[in-house]
Image 1: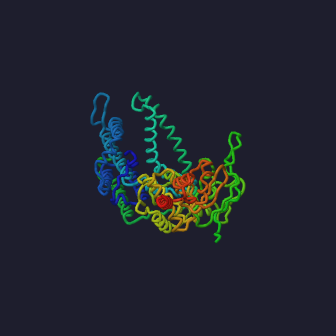
Image 2: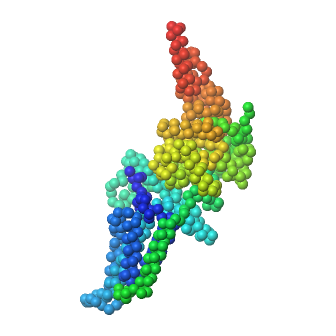
Length: 272
Length: 289
């Protein structure tokens, strides 16, 4: 059934990566992205790639997931690579009519590809191993300091939670409305793209009306349970950093140090 | 044995805000009702009679235009004590889907307590406790859309029970459920009243549910027109029929038989009573014949 689909790309599991604190995961992924851009040579970037491999191995997810997340951005990777190969100026190693390819161009292209792949693989690992709800929760707590400058952090995360909660409900409802419209002779499967888009209108309007009605009732139910925004609110589940979180942080910090070391003292070949 | 009156509505009137310059009709027209601690009250009335509006006055969702409502001595018009009132009088609605806020059952049950700023450890205890009371503890880590309607409604009840209210108002809690779900939910509600001593006000369309209560109030056209024990209320079969409501099936059966001249007791409420009465009648008939 369609409502059983897992929202987002979460893959359930019980690995050490799954059990990391979502806050730590968010911070580490940001650190990892920064790290990928700090690396300025092939060797230091390979350290970054190796880190991604280690994280995937620890998460015990099937390797084909890496391919799954890279696939949609393949055109971007190819496009970047081609641009870099032909348009980065340097000593030409290959010339034919007006096309010239420089060694620097090839190197930039290779580095860019590794960087993008690591970037996508790394951030996908976050969504693969963290439930949307844990992510929202982690984000709310991380952004809490922003409340001081009047960013509605709690409200945003409440909205996210409610959206996540109602996705299966609304999918269910859409199916019911579709069935009801079909029973009244609506034709949704034939015609060109414009006709099909038009056929969606009789589905979307009832869906919107019912969503508003639901929102109204939900607001009432929330009021009955004394909801009054984020002020003075406590949480049942407290997030706690444990040894494994600090271990992960140490690992990323180690990677960072190794890359900076490589940048400074590593071999001079394959550098930009 | 006069018990303390817990919710007291004193000749309240209410109408929804006007728009388009149309003067809105009074939804409640001078209603007075008092609900005592520990009571199990059913409120009946056909659609649009004002019964849901009345229920919304019990926990300060609505404030009367005229008259006043007090909950445990606190007037609902006092806005500063709103959360105190809502904590004492919880409310459960018809559609279980539209009451569940969180994506995990136990987090939903914790919602009210989180809002009230209860310390985390105490929330945990009260959530587990509430889930056990509605017999849904083993489902605490499920997602709401994995549960049946009856189970979802029990979760909604647990979310209220976790606040440890003195009174729960239920607005047609079984209207969207199948017979099995209805039975589950009614069992849970009865348990709240009998075992935990929580005052229950249930708005319902099902007469057999009303027959289970200690007291039945019938609202018609913004007024409380009957307010008594189910036995007394349902004895007036013709009057109830006149305002477009039903009586429990067994009551109606016996009433009709009695009209045809059979010797049956005045008001029969439950199936067991009905069976007993009919058996007695049939045996009596044999003896005579």
